[in-house]
Image 1 (cartoon, rainbow, N blue to C red):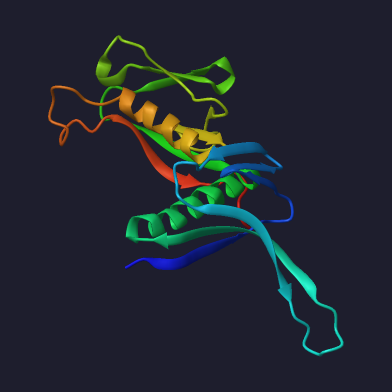
Image 2 (cartoon, helix red, strand yellow):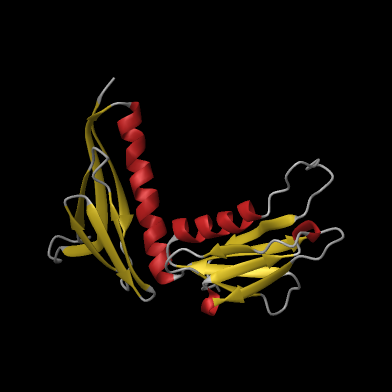
Length: 204
């Protein structure tokens, strides 16, 4: 059964500027600017403000907070699911330009200690001595992503950036470079694994 109209709202914070045009969204905040194109989704996107009615008749009608509204008309199950997908992406963009994203990775080894050297001002990770191999694994971070060595925890890397997809993909590239081949992975657990996900600006 088709639903005549389904919609979902996202409140835009005061310190975030959002531009919406032809399902292209540009979000600007303290940490920078992110853009994303939603033209592949059959939804309507626009900014709106609700009127707040006064309690007494003589009071003035005030405007509520600025919101992004995502609508879907005459949609079935898959098209209705696109509404939540779209709002989740926008919420991640808002969080990215305000708080940022941070992934922590641990170097796990049993016998041969893994060495990770960070070069190019946090743009490249060189993984050495994985399972005693001589080969140097070079992993380049995606644009806008930086990696540093943790100051208080041994054998830990901290990957940070504003775009959650680029940060998580960079962590995945490091993890994929250290996969164990031609051995029993239940016994050989060496590698670089994500241990914690969070934001750069911590909540009080």
